[in-house]
Amino acid sequence: MILVALFTIYPIIASIGYSFIKWDGLTAPDGFVGLQNFVQIATDHFFWLSVAHSLWYAAFVVPIQLFIALILALILNRPKFKFTSIYRSLFFLPAVMSPAILAVVFRLLISALGVDWLGDPDVVMWVIIVIGIWQTLGYNLVYFLAGLQTIPYELYEAAEVDGAGWLGRLRHITLPGLKNISVVILLMAILGSLNVFDLVMVLTGGGPYFASSVTNTYIYQLAFGNFYSGAGASSNVEQNVGLASAGSVFYGIMLLGLTLIQFVALARIRKKTAEQNQGAIG
Image (cartoon, rainbow, N blue to C red; front, side, top):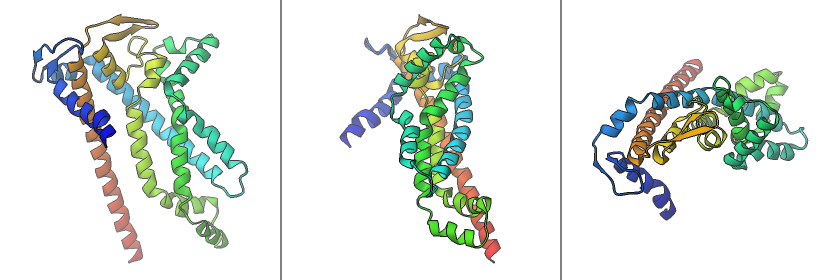
């Protein structure tokens, strides 16, 4: 609790306070500026461009990654499948490695291939998306495997005896059995993707020409005064911890709103499904 208070709760509260001042993080604060930082963030084209890139990243990473993770989990969960422990370890290995180290490795690999994908504004986000899918796939694979192992295998045997095929068992046993844990996996995957940072920061720093700038790299560069202006080049700007804090709070409120919308939508879906089931029973 002490560690959580020091490194999670206090920074959040402090960021809210910093968002109302102008401060470079080194010298004494310049003074209270009210909502000026929030107004500047809300009217900054590059902030919204970074938010758009974060949404773009999540929109492709989440569905593709969850689909692949579910398929792999279904394969690895089969009792007759051999060497499952080895395959699980191999798929999960990228997830336990530092994203920064992986980004360095991929930078070297792409450079060795002699292509300039990270310097091409039209390609760079797709490269980051592919790497992001590969890097965090293991988490969702393990979550789905845990969910599959809570489904009694006797249900599959009984369904097979009754003549249900693979598709029927998937539709009527597997997917309903994964419903609750899938909601948690989906929420975690969306929030994790929207908070991508270190992979992008090491790979491109948000460049070239802000083509891969995501919200967290934008906030980081505001705080430390190092903006990416092009492929392989950066330009120093005045660092402003207050402005960066306002961006962080603003984005946090957006994510909170998105999470609440997801909870409301999922609650309505559950209620509608329950009503349909009751109607079918009646």
